[in-house]
Image (cartoon, rainbow, N blue to C red; front, side):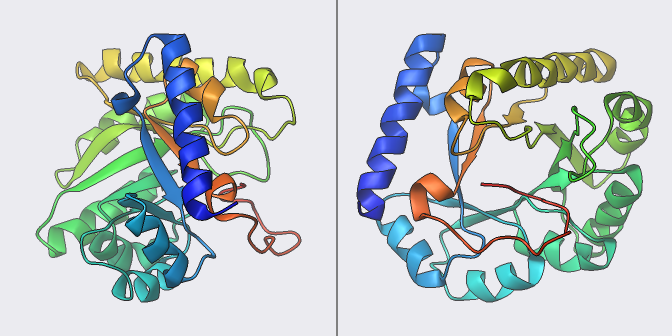
Length: 238
């Protein structure tokens, strides 16, 4: 199937999941995970109407963004090292994978130097998986006020990479827990957090039913990509 056919299928799946949940399909952003994919495929996806793309590695993104249409928007979804924060703040409209107070502080520092405010999502590791990055829920709640106090940071919500399973229904409770944690964060901050980034190619329907506003889809759209190096942490399985 062509990329256009894949996209049409994904959009139909999103619409069906929204109908089941009584939601407007416009309330769900399809984030095209373009990591590992060449600029030509991004341009083809853009011609099909996609505008927001997700990258996991800052160096790859810097090169790719310069070779793609300027109207496209880019978000960081992979693990971010503090020494890459300056470039990440420059390249991306949002950093979804903020997994520590220290990283948020470094992003704030870089955003201040670039005279911009950086929207972020806070990545949560609900299942406590050693192969995943992210806050433990209790640590997130402990650090939330300090992150929110950073002047050049805007917390827009939470993000999670769910445990992999061939049966998407098995991760429904984890998606629900993230939604409930977002509510706790909102109560603590006294403000609404607009985004829940959760759900990927194999489970995004369930994620939408549980409140996802951003679904990160790569494999179902672009096809398979190279595997991560053996022994490395998995920052964005697809």
